[in-house]
Length: 189
Image 1: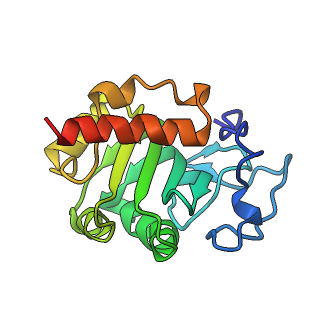
Image 2: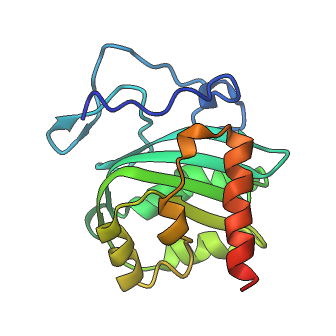
């Protein structure tokens, strides 16, 4: 897992450690020192720790003008044992919402497992973004099934066309437009 780097080709558009509104403002990264791990597997030092023992992220893009954030995830999303959604919501999402971010794109191709608990934080997140949305791209099918089984898919758009997007082929604004278009079509059906 230590060889899986967060996507870095959008650094010309945004760097979270340079953004004074980012929860990761001022963070310094080592290119060589591996300190974070998912269980016994060390991960690349560019991933951000936010309080979870098994889930890490990279804030790839925030557009305050267009009110969206793109977040890439890695690890195990475990609400049952570690309450990962609480840490994600309180440490990352709330500061973004406080800066008027209402559209969230979560990229989950490197999330290996999901263990549900309650939907409280998902519901709070959803209710605090007004007309915004939360879209999950490229999550594994067994994770989508577990989100659905826990009725969390009510708050998160996932599966189907959202798993077919080659998001790396777009600029951040292009990706936002593609996802926004899919969600608008879904809502208007």
